[in-house]
Image (spheres, rainbow, N blue to C red):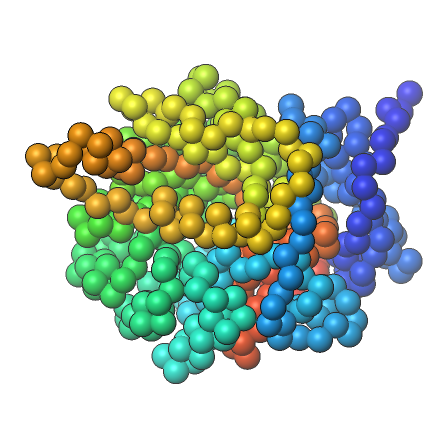
Amino acid sequence: MATEREHLMQTQSLCPICLRKLEAFIVEENDDAYMLKTCPEHGLFETVLWRGRTPMREWIRTKERATIKNPITQIDQGCPFDCGLCSAHRQHTCTALIEVTSRCNLNCRFCFADALDSQSKDPSLEQMRFQFESILKVSGRCNIQLSGGEPTVRDDLADIIRIGVELEFPFIQVNTNGIRMAKEEAYVKALKEAGLSSIFLQFDGIDDAIYEKLRGKPLFELKVKAIENCQKYGIGVVLVPTIVPRVNEQSIGDIVRFGISHSPTVRGVHFQPVSYFGRIPKAPKDEDRITLPEVMDLLCEQMHGMVEMNSMQPPGCENALCSFNGNYLIEKGVLKPVSKRSCCSSNAKAEEGANKAKAFVARNWAYQQQAKEEKLSDWDKILNAIANNTFSLSGMAFQDVWNVNLERIRDCCIHVSMADGRLIPFCMYNITNMEGKSLYRD
């Protein structure tokens, strides 16, 4: 006998074939949640959204929307076809992402950008300045992530960082595979001197078999060397594993333990369950996906009690279904929780959540300066110990065309800067149909 499905919510999504906007329904069955949507031309699509010990209905948090004070685009066709940001968007920019190149020195199996080591022309420094200034006009001094492609293929990346510093952006991070930062210490030094705060380091495990499967070559030793160079020059590191079923979901605990052993240079781990972009002619099966609550469950299991579910909480900034986060102190190699989940149904202000998220990232993902103990008062020693022993665990589930929920898009706080100055919610910028056609990236 079929299990009865409970209706959780109605939203809107897209057809994976024609990108038409569709009504979509999120239903729950045995505490697992699925999206159902039907295109009048291409039929029914069903995708798992949420599996694990924490039901979706217990994770949802409502927010009082923020208002975009300087929208760039007018509302014409409605979400998601008027991104820019438009006045219907409900959250400010926490992190603005600038793609500084479309080139890359890897050919990864999973990639947002579908980048290659091509001869395409990089945007000029003048173009970079225009995009920084456009972000400033719309979103103020938010956090900046320089991405690509692989940003470190640019020899003038330090000059780009200096533009952001001159415009007084408080936190500048580079999204990188770490290869050049491992091989060229002088390059790392130059980035630090330019004002780099942190790197978002692709880090899928501590076993080269994982890298060979996901990235096409053994990379673990290079990852370690990149971290050592960042330690030498005072650059914070966040480890960013893409979690792929049957490849590295059993490495979650190993990654966290590695991060703890390389603290305080490594400031935390940010998990990204695999999403499907580019040309994917067949819909990914549910067993090809891992959802946020499954990552949290595996994290608790593989940390053998060091991390408990109630230490992880929904975000205060983006939509609750987008991510989780937990904050900890490291004491003798053991994580002690600082955060604890409270009732998730309470209403919060989105703008206040955005401000807190920006401040947290700028404070906790940057390198913490090591102060000399003998020069500190007892109270300063306590503050210094706390600053140098904080560690964050977080995860973000990016949406693809099969599972995109436009309610989540409207609440997005990570926005990609376009060449013309528009700001596009990250998932919408990267979403493609089954043939690889994009609404915004191309």
